[in-house]
Image 1 (cartoon, rainbow, N blue to C red):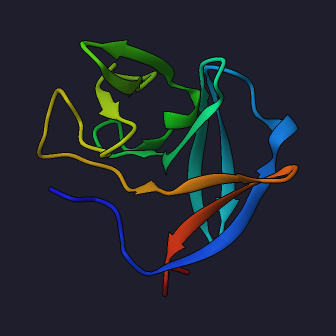
Image 2 (cartoon, rainbow, N blue to C red; image 1 turned 90 degrees about the vertical axis):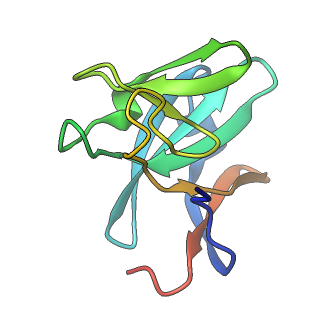
Amino acid sequence: MENIATDYSWVTACRTDDLVENSGICVLLEGRQIAIYQHGPSGTLYAMDNWDPIARASILARGLLAEHEGELYVVSPLYKQRYSVETGICLDAPEHCVGVYPVVIDGAHIRLALPCGVA
């Protein structure tokens, strides 16, 4: 299951100094809540929908980043399901997934790519 779109519209999400290492923030872009995470001292960025389809709540930005056997994931703060930051697939219930987005640093800003036509 591939969860990454191919046609993007790049938008500025926040400033680099808004992020906290190994933590998430939530941004509202074009009517969509997106969680952005900065992992480790290298500052690798990940972005995914903030909506947890199992908890039915916008809470993933408050989840913890963790890693097991090379798989980096976010632990949902409500029911503790794990979502891969690279694929968006729920590792505990693979029938559930969230959207993931390409994200880059552009000077002092964080930019991410939303699928074209998303409003």
